[in-house]
Amino acid sequence: MKPALKQYPFYLKSTVIIFGLICASFVMYTLKGIMAPIAFSLIIAILLNPLVNRMQRKGVHKILAIFLALLLAFLVVGGIIYFISTQLMHFGDNLPELKEKFNQHFSQLQQWVAGKFNVPIEKQQKVLNDSLNSGQAYLGKTLGGVLGTLGLIFLVPIYVFMLLFYKTLILNFLHEVFAEENTEKVSEVLVETKTSIQSYMVGLLLEALVVAVMNSAALMILGVDYAILLGVIGALLNMLPYIGGIVAIALPVIIASVTKDGFSTQLGIIGAYAVIQFIDNNFLVPFLVSSRVKINAFFSIVIVLLGGALWGVAGMFLSIPFLAILKIIFDRLPEMKPWGKLLGDEVPTRHKGEIWMRRHKRKAEANENTSA
Image (cartoon, rainbow, N blue to C red; front, top):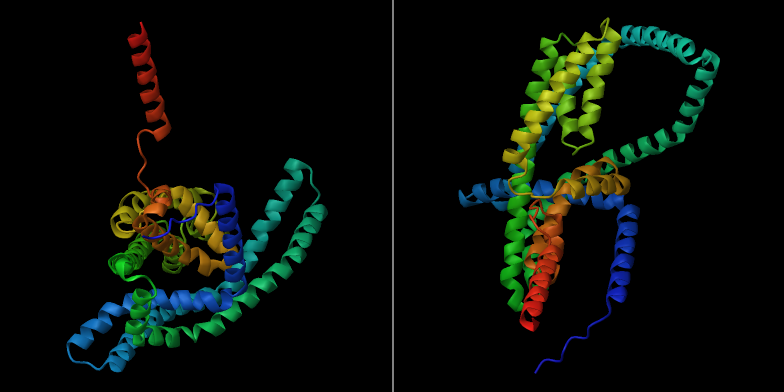
């Protein structure tokens, strides 16, 4: 007969959980330069795994199959980087002219603020200089983090290769580390996690492609300079949930403000991007991205902000897959199912407290009728 498990009071369990979350967040923040590339490598390895398996089934050696899959990934990413770099070179050729126009518009804006709000131009310039000086330290820290991340990017292909090569060893470890009676649950979690991440990432790439085409077409119709570059950058920024879309709209509006007279083009950009966002949120995301990752909007926003605070842009991108994995695990554990329901996007029509109150009311009425 198994001994009964000791039940601890709620306040003690909640204190331990909060303390554990704080420790985990501290470790993740401290080791973000190491853990972020490993997390990206894990997602890339999951994406390339079906291709590696298919080549192995056709008789290709495991090491050669992994190498060919990595080479294909390099060619795709390299093509995207080459396209964006050529567009940026064209943008750089016209940068002095754009800078001169921007200075003219900025001077007009300062004069308008001085006349409308009675704020002298000297005071405006002082506030601007103070803001720039206070932001230099943050900018330097951000650039240092970006350079550090770029340095670790060279480790990502090595991580991906090792994860694919030692895949069987890792899977066996995950099965053996849990009790034998949990083998079926572990297999379900692993299969559903792999499927969810693959579905999410493939859907995200397809969504970015469609959004890039729509952005570029809209900007070209409106006559905005560098339409293709801005359209592609907007689609890439749109991959950052909820926050990237705001920046994606701001960039073409700024370019149009510098290169165009009046405000009709800017209003056209805002209207076109609003339509594109409506199509994206109501058609593309539900059918391409959210078919497997069913997380409600509230926790999606919270986890994106937390990911950005911990790991910066990388954390914002990785936050949704990480939350999806947690939800899959929660749904498979009886004691964690309430947390899985809390993260999900299914909203019940009535809460259990209301149901209990109605039952209690009917019971009280029945007792009164019986006593009468």
